[in-house]
Amino acid sequence: MTLLVVGSAALDTVETPFGRVSGALGGSAIYFSLAASLYSPGQVKLVGVVGEDFPREHLDFLTQRGVDLKGLEVVPGRTFRWEGRYDYNLNTAETLATELNVFADFHPRLPQEYTKAKYVFLANIDPELQLEVLHQVKAPELVMLDTMNYWIEHKRAALTRAIQAVDLVTVNEAELRQFTGTYGLFKAAGEILALGPRAVIVKRGEYGAALFCRDDCFTIPAYPLAEVKDPTGAGDTFAGGFLGYLARVGECTPETLRCAVVHGCIIASFTVEDFSVNRLRRLTWQQIEERFQEFRRFTHFE
Amino acid sequence: MTLLVVGSAALDTVETPFGRVSGALGGSAIYFSLAASLYSPGQVKLVGVVGEDFPREHLDFLTQRGVDLKGLEVVPGRTFRWEGRYDYNLNTAETLATELNVFADFHPRLPQEYTKAKYVFLANIDPELQLEVLHQVKAPELVMLDTMNYWIEHKRAALTRAIQAVDLVTVNEAELRQFTGTYGLFKAAGEILALGPRAVIVKRGEYGAALFCRDDCFTIPAYPLAEVKDPTGAGDTFAGGFLGYLARVGECTPETLRCAVVHGCIIASFTVEDFSVNRLRRLTWQQIEERFQEFRRFTHFE
Image 1 (cartoon, chains in turn orange, yellow):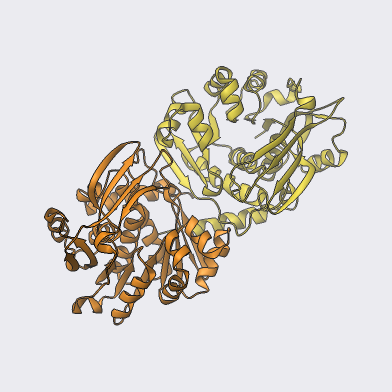
Image 2: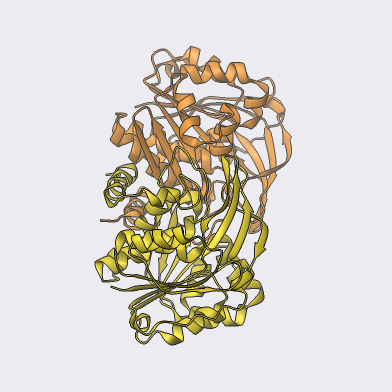
């Protein structure tokens, strides 16, 4: 199944207690694509924008990984840049600087062949842009949306319309509580489901993830890691593994949804083992499968 | 298997966003006993102390539940009292007042028949008292210890000796990090295991629990609850379900340890649904079994 993603392509400067990278490859659409392309090789189509400063080697790397970049515009100006820092509690980033640059005037235009995509991921961008993309896709089968505190606060109406238009919503606990004004996860997820989506996937960082559907609930811990270096991209690669898995198996049932959550956690666990997309560069399908089996052993009880 | 617990019997005053109780039945040995007695009826022996103000009805209730109170001294003076408050983040209590009262001069003396106990829980009390109890038990098969930040800070040497003498240690994440000075759970748990215990059980509140052994790791989320009213006693009933289950099955293998962790989470999930021990009062074995099956469904994937 073809898998379309719209989101940011960025150059990130990130500091954690375990090191620092400067101007490294990042952005939600990039992280998503690299994860999803491991599950659905040759199926991922990226929509986004970069400036003329975006290193050629990054484009080559993505193309090598089979990510379709026809929808990635290269325009005059500087690429979107984000600078952040994490302390020992790696669950939340402190944003030190955001330069929108070429992202400020971005309006996604889908190449003709992209409009037939079946699976769509609207990464964390302005919900009005998420809606613009959705209107250009002709008959999507499964659309997933991510968002963040900024849009919940400043674009609530558009975000609500976007949520009403999608099948799956992925948020973290704080975002879910902020959007609904409800503390309890069960109840808060129910309020999102009441808007239309068939499932809400709550990302809990080092504590795993939970899936809420109208009549089902699934909860798993994170894959236990000895070492975490940089949590940047965990959420976007979670989404990439999740939707990449569903696109791979080609159906969205209660059973495949659960496995998709596990795969989201697995791929996110690899992502955070190194800075930027470094771990994803050398990640193989066999390693994913091995960790899936290992995760099963770590969580199994009779 | 007989199951001995030493810990506090208390009258608690607790406030959460969902209500308040004043002078309610509480204390680590009480919570533990009520949970464990559901798993191992007639096997739980309690060691502790209360004052003359301790309501007769509480003693009757415990006896009714088959908890052996021969080791519970009733002495002149007031019972240990704790007053605490939780905000919406129900994971950590703010202690408003602690009155040690009769607990201040407590030195556990085991009735003769208690000294033959096979399973022992040293609840969160002064590690010197934990050691005093341990020295009186003749040939325990399995000893588990709980502790807290206060003892880690003020009685580190005694606590280390106690940890060296037990089989299982149960702590929360913050305590594990504080005791070892190590942030990563894997590594921190390894440092405890290096002292002697065969397993470390890390309690993660609303995020479940993890079990670390020398060559095994098991991790599970919490049972997903629609509503939490009062987290007091969650950790002690976790220990009660955990050790009560092991005493029930009569063996401690990698498999039974995992199931014990699940049962700890299950019984803790009931505890927090109401204030004080109220939910435990009306809890039945059938409800525990039903929730265990439900939990299996909530966490199962193919």
